[in-house]
Amino acid sequence: MAAGNLQRDLVRTAPERSVPERGTSRRGTSERGTPERGTSERGAPGRGTSERGTPERGTSERGAPGRGRSERGTPERGTPERGTPERTTTRDPADSAVFGSRLLVADLRAAAPAWTPPERVLDSLRRATPDGWRVHVVRSLTVSDGDGADRPSDETLSVIGDAEAYLGFGAPRALLEAAPGLRWIHSATAGVGSLLTPELRARELLLTNSAGVHAQPIAEYVLGGVLHFLRGLDIAVRLQAEGRWDREPFVGAGHSAREVGECRVLVVGTGGIGGAVGRALSALGAHCVGIRRRPELGAPTGFIRVVGLDGLDDELPSADVLVLAAPLTSQTRALISAERLDRLPPGAIVVNVARGALLDEQALAEQLESGKLRGAVLDVFEEEPLPADSPLWGKSRALLSPHVSGVSPRRFWERELALILDNWRRYRAGEPLRNLVDQRAGY
Image (cartoon, rainbow, N blue to C red; front, top):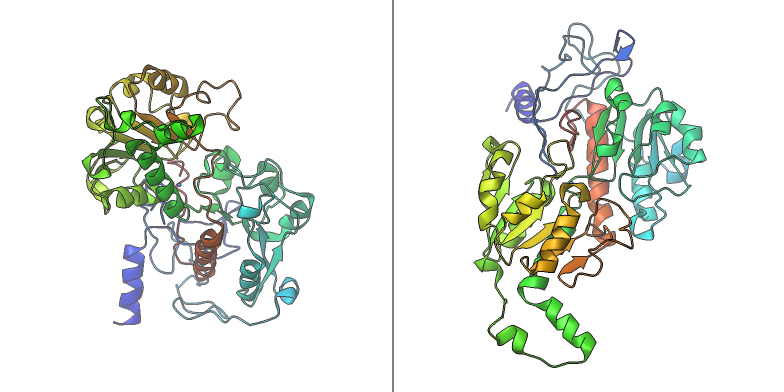
């Protein structure tokens, strides 16, 4: 295939927008392509994929020269033609800070050991530094919980002023204020709702997240939680604590044991995480139906069909398992109300691995207390840490965990490093970025 045809194919199929030449400006702001109205499903590689227009090769969407091109669309001197491998110099990791004028700040040393990258990951990042760039790895610890720290460390603030790219767990407002030259932010978290401030939107920064990187461990968590109640493991745990041998709850008239293959599962959000949930449960025979903001995009692997948010009420009465895996937006806040919980059939299981604010926790506690619901598997809550007086704590039919469903210390950084390095290469080449957040949609 000719190089020109290959490039046009890449442009037509790439869903994200491209990165313009650094320093090209209009009306005092850096020039960027503006995406068409679209959506990104949460999670994935995609906590989605984006549907955006892509500018014509060599130009921005408003006709200005694209990254690395002159007014005629030809490569500027010293700029490699797209598709040409960028020269990367192998150097000692300790020396990366003294090379290059373009700065990437890596603020990834989490206070929680399970979320801090191993030194081999940071060394790989340093070794991947291309000519013209330098990397500063922040040694101060940061917060990996939720959407990241409320305030950056003093060390981060001391270097961020010269940065063009930033890798961290979210990006607090003080960091944005101290970084006038910042153009790309990558968050190692999937949720970025709290980052989407008016200040960030006004600057038209490129924002990517780690949606989908967490998909596999979260899908396994969901599967384990569903099996916990389908197979009566909650009853077994209670009997063991009481030191009592009793088969009646499992074989008697009130038995409730079921197989996954008997269940109809309704998954709200079919992006990276929801998609992985559907694949995991359908592999055991479950019939999975998805709720998707844009159902015209079709059903992912593992789903028999998808419907839009307007079809949610019609799907709830036949859902044996309800899984919430959608991002928190204005459309999904308080989505599962008391009235919608009432529409679930007796014996249903509710799972929330999205955000606590999607679900009416008080109404859920009442349904568990009444015995209508078989159980609830909750990893996220509207207020975290979950208050000591929450009615959920005392419910034997509730399986609670402290927002840890995505923890996978040995595999997370393999996937995260691959995403970071690929997006850094794409950014330098002016190619569409993976996991680009649709700042209008909120994810």
